[in-house]
Structure formats: structure tokens, C-alpha cells
Length: 470
Image 1 (cartoon, rainbow, N blue to C red):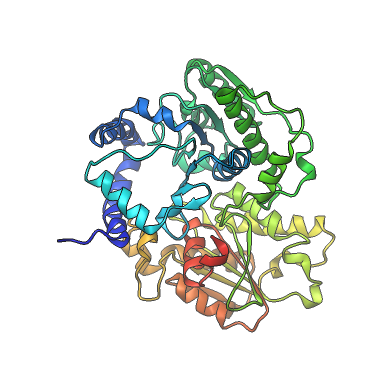
Image 2: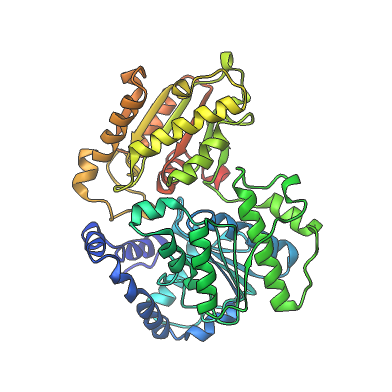
């Protein structure tokens, strides 16, 4: 009889991934295959004994956006748990960093391997129902209207974080079209929230809220006192996500319990916002085995999110915390997915670094910010294999073998920083190779990992950071 372990469950889950050929076919259709996602999800739901109406019992806070939606979910999760410590609160997000079970958290903790395997096979075998939770924070995977999470008929409240111009460039859509797609999570009779957006995107969201008959459309106002507290998530951009989270949480409690919102932050909200943790986003980690190695982890993968990453990294409490004469060597580990503009990313990062150095009155040269740069694939191990949870079948095998993207990044870096020592530009086939280069540097050393959440997850796995980072 076949085993039914966590590893077996992950293997079966990986078998459902779209491969590179399928994704290419999807691009060729202009994305029309996405129209099938919701009918398929409804069919799957019915096959395991549920209807979409059953999902309303989860008391869903549904969140989408181009950037910041995961952080917003983390803040909402923390606020609700701190406000209702006796509740069971579910959090569903994607993607994961190291283990797929991170996507499903109950009261802030990823479900165990044993629980994941048990419930996975319950679903796989179309068996009995699972227990419900008191509140669920549900992050959209991609888009909104046709995302698989958008089968909840009546969430308690819906929210949209910042829309980004990067998706305009990558997807070939206007900001109006992207706003229209994201606004698909708005529902009849449900409050529709968003943050300040570019005019074109905001008009689209307002139209969608009207079309979808939302109970109200709210551009969340500033939260008095929010700027005065130190959030649990680093980066100036997190204050926008935190503001959205506060208003989402207040709308949730207003709808479920008739609670009137406070005019100022409550002590519980302050504690929740300060206590929020979300790995791989502007995260500083001291290496437990090499305590003089500091990892700066940010899965930023768009021009706008990388801009936030560099603003965080090139700041007095991170890269500039040491005087220029005595700062430790700095290493950049970077990768980006096929189809994204690596040269544009790197050029934008250097330009932003120069602005930040000037802003903080540093006499450092942005072109000399890093002593080594490493461009590696997201393949986990030097053997050429992925950790099961990090397996990606969406990258063409020949592209991985030839390191096409990584060589393009290295060429771009050399073009942008022509005087950078060639021997310090590393093109490597795996995350494990990259870790070997870092380990070979004399300590202390600072390492910025950016460009891909999967890359960050691979670094956490190979460098042995899970216990302190997750």
C-alpha cells in the first residue's frame, strides 16, 4: 500500500503544477484559460462535499492587489488574533517560502506536516468535512476576478492593496484593466476597501464596486497615530498596508459584532501591528551558525517592490548602520523569473540606492554598494534538484541548464557597473552554490537576497535559517 506521508502529499501536489508548455499556451491565448478557473474550483468544491455557500461560514476577509496584499493579510491576521485571543483564525496566503504548509496558518502557526498530509488526503479522497474557523484572511493568488479564491459568495469584507505599474508592463494590460480584474473580488452587500491608487486604477475600482453592488466603496483614510509606532514589518511601504489592515479589521468586527470603530488606534491594535511577522519581506536574520553573517531577505520581484526593498536596505539601520570605513563586505544574491526585465530591475535598484545614499548624507558610491553579486537560479541544491516544497515546473529545462537569465543579469550588471571586478560577478546554477560563495567570505558579511520569493525560500532552506526566519 502506498504511503501517505507529507512528502507523498507534496509530490502529488507538484503533479498538478502547470508546466512551461502549458503556461506558454496560456500566454498565447491572452489569458482566456483563466476563465475556467472558477468553474473548476466550484466543481472541485462540490466533489469534496461543499457548496460555495458553505465558505461564507469561514467569515472571510478577502484581499488582493499588485503589491502588499500578503503583508496586509498578515497585519489583519495579527489584529484579529490579538483582539480575539480565544478565536481560531485561519490565514491562507501564497506563495510559500520553504514549505507549502506555510500557506495555511491557524492562529499564526503553519499547520504541521502531519496535519497537512491528513487533510490533503481527506480532500484528495473526497472524504469528510474539516472543522471551520472563526475568521479567515484569504489572499488572492493572481488577479482577482478569476482567481481560485474568488468562489466565496459573501466574504465579510474585501480589500485591495496597491496596484502596480509593473503588471501593466508584464501583462500588457492597462492599469484600468488590472483594476477591473482586481475589483472582481468585490461582492454584493459587502464593503469594498482600497488604498489610494493612481487615478486610472482608482476609477476602475470605483466602477467595479458599483457594478458588483458593494455596500460601500472606501478609500481608507490615514489612521491617526499609525506613523508613530514601529511596525513588526520593516519598510516605509508597510504603513500603507497596515492602514488598510486596520480598516479591514474594523469593518470585519463591525459586521460580525456591531463593534464601533475607535477614532484612534487601540492598545490591542498597536500591539498587533507591532507583533506582526511575515517572513521574507524586508526581514533581517542573524545566521544561527555564522553569527557574524547577517541576511537581509526580501522577495521583492517587481520594479516597485524592489524600489521599496532598496529604500529599506540602504538605510541607517541596515546597510548604513556601520561607517563607510568599517562596514562589512556586502553580497547581493539576485534572480528574477523569465520574462521579467532583469537589466531594468538592476538599473532601477542602483538608481534608487544612489538616491538613498544622498538622502542619508552618505558619501558612499552606489556602484560600490556591493562587493560581490551572485546571479543564481532558484534550483535548491547543487545536485540540480529542488526541495520538494520548492519544486518549480514552470521554468523551461533548457533555460535552467544554460543559465540564460543569470548570464543576462551578469551582462547587465557589468554594463551598469563596468569597473566592478569580473571575478566578483558569479553566475551559478543553484542556491546551494550561492551559499557556498557566501560561506567562503571572511566574516562579518551582509547578504541581501532579492528578486524572487522562491529564491528567498531556497536561501532560508539551504542556509539553515528556518528556525529563526519562519
